[in-house]
Image 1 (cartoon, one colour):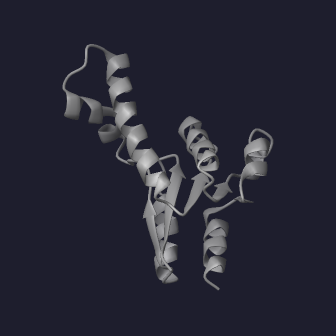
Image 2 (spheres, rainbow, N blue to C red):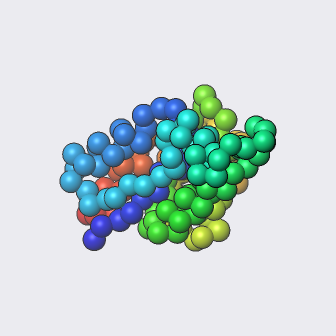
Image 3 (cartoon, rainbow, N blue to C red):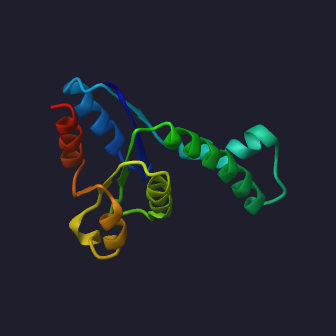
Length: 146
C-alpha cells in the first residue's frame, strides 16, 4: 500500500528532504507532495501565466490563486498531511494548510517544538498526532507499515 503524504510547512529549511531521505532509507512506500518550495517561482507564477500585474497586491493575488489551487488539489489527493511549525519563520501558510487538512478530514501529523505548545494547543488537540521532531513523525509513518 503506497501512501501519498502532503508536507505542509515552511519552505526555508531542508526538513522535507530530511523526511524523504529517511523514509526512502527505510524503503517506505510513500509518495511525498507539497507546496511549491521555490519561493521565487511561487511568488511570480501568476505573472508568468497571466502577465505583468499593475501592482504588488495584484501580483500577490494572482500568485496566491494559483498556489491555492495547487495546494487544494494535491492535498485532496493525499492520504495524510504532515504540517511542520518551526520557530524561526512566520507560520501562516502552515496554519492554513493544517486547518484545510482538518476540514478535508485528512489525517494530520503536527510537528512543533515544545516552545510552540501554547500557541498551537487547539490545533494540536485537533491533529491525530503531535510530535516535536521530523524523526518522530517518520517513526509514526514507519509504524503504519508494521
